[in-house]
Image (cartoon, rainbow, N blue to C red; front, side):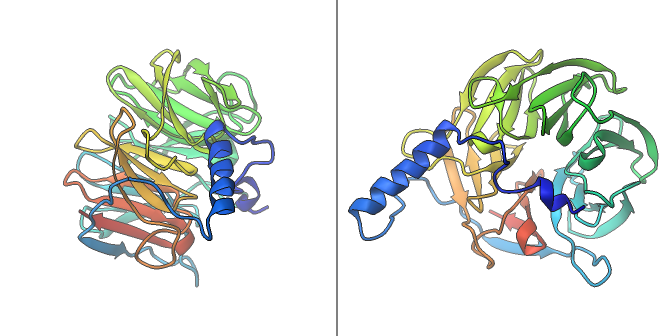
Length: 322
């Protein structure tokens, strides 16, 4: 079975979030009174001086789609692709090693994170588990089984680690939630459920942590939700007044400047935003050319500010230099 079955633009049981409903209504009203729809957003344009492509090795006769990214403190970049591979690049875009997932015939992984001890955690989405690899690709351990109980997963798509070493895994499917684990994979707690309200999710697709808070990218609800480390809901972050709403945001990273970097799958763009929702700049639109992205899934931010984008629908890995 193709993994595409599980990754439609809108999940069958997803309901429009408040921002999605507002966006559709606003578009209908605007087009009703004008000859065409005009973007009234006042968002600043993110200046990009270079647009480069990193080479993805072929798998057979095809160039696989990149679908998850992570960059570590040394600017090594870890890429998951639709061939079921983990690709590791240096900061110049040179491929330095790669390995395959133990199994990937029924679906491909979607989340990757380099842990404090140098091992690599991968959310093995369609096998309902998290796998911990050595940096050379040896399987060290794994945790999780299929199910909706504590420590089980339906479709885990996001993994992150806080500075205390705890792991957070986001999943969708029968359960839309975040689970917290010890570094050894022991279950600690969980939070979230399906819905559009506070503390509810529709595809929690990315997680970021700082010293006190956990940020969850709530993709189909077009927002970021903020929790304390025990899972208590704190607040919602969306773009500020006058800014265009997020459009199916799929990945979130914190840059070296402390800003949020967000890739929007439906919007085909990169958004840079303060943690209070103020948009600092945007680049891109749905595109097959070099002015945007086609169904992008992920991003990474290097220490010098360069941004890598998994331009998934265009089968390419993009480096943006500002």
